Image 1 (cartoon, rainbow, N blue to C red):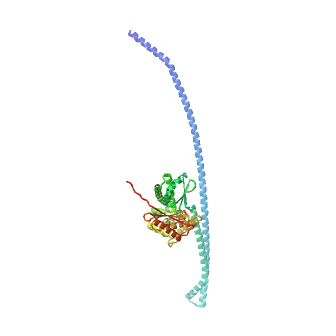
Image 2 (cartoon, one colour; image 1 turned 120 degrees about the vertical axis):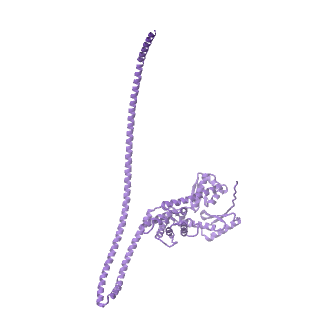
Length: 513
């Protein structure tokens, strides 16, 4: 029974396996066909993508080649243009050199011709001397020494006019050549440095966003604008011009400080006397940093080194000084360039000394309104105090003939200073006279005891004097205004009238801890 059961089970198993095989074989074939078709589709897609990528790569490569070819062509054109310009400059230089060589050759030929003529005359004189010597010995029976003396006297009398003419001709030739060379040196020096011509004005404008800010700047009963003018020493003009406030003063440094302080106040928006004083102090500190930067920049532009920081600050301060309307710092840089260019053309001159002396030759003007004396004398004392090279001091001290010339650099510097100052449009004498008159007004008012600050405003029509309230009462302030006005009448010449206003203000401060 068990055996029969096993046989039946085996048969059933074989039948089940056969049935399963018959059922699953078509499905496997279907799956295999589907996989084969999917693989074929993927292969075709890959081939299409590969062809598209290859086509895009070819197009991109062709575009890159075209861009490279175009850039190479542009580079070749640029190089050709630069080469053409270089050839033109070289041709011009060669032409100038040829002209100089021709002039030198002509002068040399003229000199050789003159020398040849002088040698010929010398030979003729020697022959005549031999003849006369023989004749004198034969006729006068003189000794050789006596004959030599007589012949020398006669020869001197006969040849002196000819020798004088020859010498005069040579001197004229040398003077002519010297004048031509000097003119060429000066012209070349001026051509190497060309600067713009600009005259300084006495006003500065500040742009504002809205005219409503003008009321805030003026303040209640004018206290803001009065405090601002007192602290900065400028005249603030607020008129009907839209979006503009004008700052007027002959002192450029004051105008700069006032402009910076006013712009910061407008940004802050809180405008009252304490804030005005704070921003004016910050603007003054900023201006002190600026003058050092200006001095360092000027020295760096010229390639000058070795000056102490105090000297560079004084050089930077020249940016805020003018001479006959010409900015003194720009004038000093221009003189340095010109002096260096002239010195390079002259044997025995030191270009570095000339360049340094040119930059600082007007340094005395930075403090001339604070110290008595000419700016050349003041500048010499300042440079000696800070241990500047004696050669530089000797070159700069004589540019206005305050001291005798001690070197060729001193004469070069005087010539460069005259060239810079005398070129057309560089200076305006009327502006300088106007500024000098304003300084005289301030100096007169500042000479009285108890005066702290003096500002000349309104083009010299008003002088504002600020006194120490602790040292002077109202009666003394009134007396001061009267005396100051009388002294101005006696010492100055001016059109119209000058109003003297004395301000006495008491301020009390304390700190709560």
